[in-house]
Amino acid sequence: GAGAGAGDGILQSLLSAVVPLTEPLEEIRALTYNVWFKEDVALDARMEGISQVVMDTDPHVLCFQEITPTIHMLLHGKEWYQEYQSTPAPTDAQYYTLMLFKRNMNRPDGSTPTRQLRRVFPTSRMGRYGDGVA
Image (cartoon, rainbow, N blue to C red; front, side, top):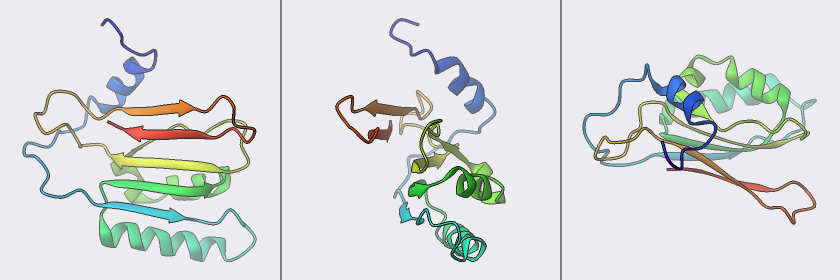
């Protein structure tokens, strides 16, 4: 439709098999975690610990800092990860932020599936950007 973004078709395809919420959420649980990009210090134990926290708290939105491609791969392999849609990983960064949100989250009126937004800060020397979920 008019004003639709280039990635809308992909996002719609990913969300098409998701059963939407039928009632508005009474609360939204968010979890933010700096996973520490250092991969040579207890990486498996740290990812298991983070995974346990995610499973125990069952957040609707996850915000991870200092994700590396290796850490992303390890988390992606966890069973809980399949319940989430994630923002795209930058292709040219050694580490980055990652936002995940439950695939079944819809707006309270049930009209439009959750969408992800990214705003790149063009004057950032370090390739900074802001992610959001609407």
